[in-house]
Amino acid sequence: MAGFFVYYIESRNPIPQNPSSDTYRVKRKAKNAKGKIKKKRKMENKQIIAQLKALGGVKPEREWVEDTKSFILDSFQPEETAHSRGFLFSFQPARLIPIAIPAFIVMLVAAGITAYLYLQTLNGNKVGVIPANDTPATYLVLAQTKLDSLKKPADIKEVADMLDKAASAIPSASKDPAETAKIVESVADINKKVGALSANEENVEEMAELKDKASVLSSKTAEALEENIQNTTKELVKNLINITESQTLSDEQAHLFSQAKADYNNGNYSQALEKILMLTNSK
Image (cartoon, rainbow, N blue to C red; front, side):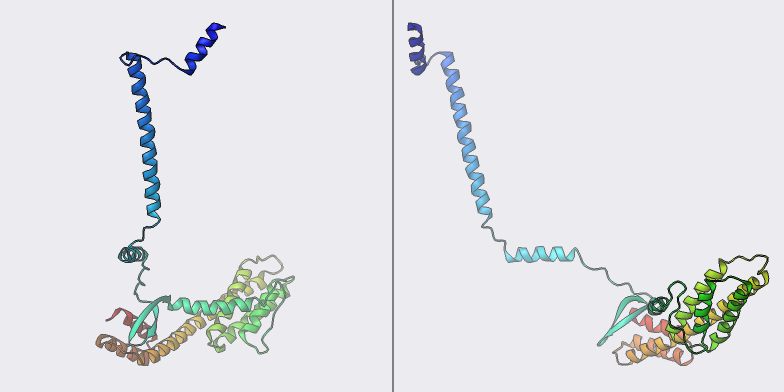
């Protein structure tokens, strides 16, 4: 019991050690080092917190902001439109501005949209509005429908007669690009269906005649398409000439423009179109 009280008293009030002893010096150094580390960490934390608070009040100079903005914008400049033959261009006062829209795409898109709307009138074997007059479109629509329900040789001959009438009417068909697009789309569909047909012992002659009529129809349509493109080019050049007449041109542009008008007057519409389009490359 007495030993316990002695231990308790010593633990509560430890007896000072001899400052000259090695053990005392080692413990003292360790304690001092530990205190310095805590103090240093505490100072570093305060410095970091102070620096972070200071960042919240930083206001960059306007010059730096503008320079940075310019640097970012300059990194995302749009690519320049390439000037080349075969491209249309729009006009602004006193200068010519090219835009990347090929002429043939403009014509095909316009024709394609019209053809698409036209084909939407056909749904399976159901026929939309059939033209009242004896036009190529009339016979082509009837032939497209009949090709889906061929049952006997007489049906094949009937379709061949429709294609023959359509081919005969092609030259007198409207030269309107939209109307031509309808015809081309119908002929392409007919050729696909005829090509998928196979003859048998009962309809060998009728099938041969049908394929022959389809071939003639394709040739007539190709000729009409070529003529239509020529007419479209003529109208296109005419419109561009009228627009260019009111623009301010350089000497080089004016010379090239006069050559384009001479080609147009001589019926060389493709050459005239090329020269007008070349105006975008001349200064």
